[in-house]
Image (tube, rainbow, N blue to C red):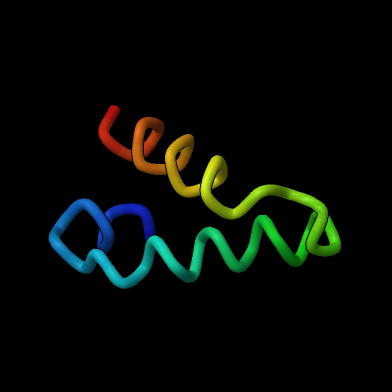
Length: 43
């Protein structure tokens, strides 16, 4: 799914944020998770 995101499917970012929130049981800050994921997925 990372390849799909990099191919232009920007809506997958929401999916990835959702997965992080699920794993952290909602304890993660979604804004920060969003920023970190954007940075990591650019690499």
